[in-house]
Amino acid sequence: MSQYERALEAYKVIGVDTEQAISVLSQLPISIHCWQADDVGGFESPDAVLSGGGIQVTGNYPGKARSIKEVQQDLEKVLTLVPGTHRLNLHASYGDFGGKKVERDEIEPHHFDVWINWAKKHHLGIDFNGTFFSHPYAADGYTIASKDPVIRAFWIRHAKRCREIAAYIGKEMNSTCILNTWIPDGAKDITFDKMGYRKILKESLDEIFEIEYSPVYMKDAVETKLFGIGSESFVVGSHEFYMNYAIRNNKMLCIDMGHFHIDEDISDKLSSLLLFDDELLLHISRPIHWDSDHMVVLNDKVKEVARELVRSGALHTVHLGLDFFDASINRIGAYVTGIRSFQKALLLALLEPTARLRKFEQDGRGFEKIALFEALSTLPFSDVYDEFLLRNKREDDFSTIKRVIEYEEKELSKRGNT
Image (tube, rainbow, N blue to C red; front, side):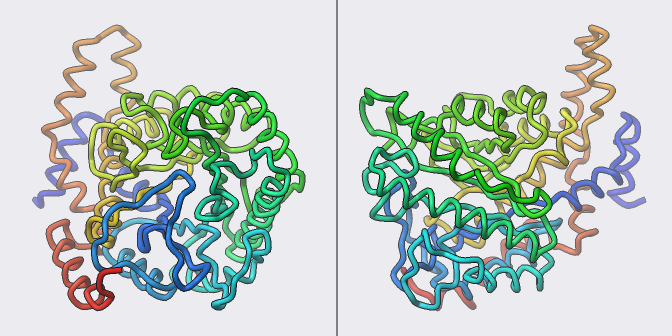
């Protein structure tokens, strides 16, 4: 009897079907963000770099991607090292602009054909994001909530273009494109007219969403935030604002794990939101003290989010994406470890005897519930995970470390320190 067969029998004793868990996880799409490969620089110009707008990448590890071709090459390598089903998460600043300056309110669908063709080749869906940072019109910290009508109109046009592009992508890919809208709007210090800014934001969003696109091709999400760099005291698009706006306007709410207080339990929000929202967008990241978007690891918060997704029966109504950027370590390694860590959390959740634990709680059998939950920690999870890798024709974690280093020596080292 193999190690996996022993694990299968061990889990069967408590009513868990490991075969089903592996099958579900293998088919569960995770949207991989393009911006880890190049530190959120984008390709609007040859010297494009992340600048301002409430986000920051730290570190200068060698090997940063310098072109669309290199980002694609790096993502191709990542896809050979991670199991499961995946999508591409793309920012508007990553279009193929042919070396020309194209303003963000003038971007067009054809600028992203290079990504559509690449994604088709690799059997990936595509999700999309507007880019409301690293621009002179975002310098004062406000975009579509700006009180300057010229700045506000510019960003509204950008948002409208992004919706058009997302619908185009969804139609070309024959796969619904999730368009996420996050803006950095807010203030570093005391803000007097909070209501005024939020009224402007609501009006801007109403204008942006005037055109209805088929949900077959694209769906809108709006992303909440507690605070960020340069918006420590006030964020216009707060959790309460977007939660209400999304429900009233039939939009998807995006919950980013790094956009709340470090002590908040993000998993606890999911069951409440899912009672009222048909779908959610979830960004998996790891904050440390502030919205720092570290590489995902298998920590308690990631485990709890995965557990709530499974326990709430929401795996197929929540769209899953990664959102982290770390330039202090090998970027390919960050991708691979982050994706695998989240998949481990999901597999742990899928291997819980959910119905039995729920019944114990319902019947007031607290001891059995806690004891059974604790007993799970000694079951052979790693053997099931290894089988998941085997079924998806991927190597174990230790071998993958070697592959990442080999790729660094062969490819990334040639790019130098950028």
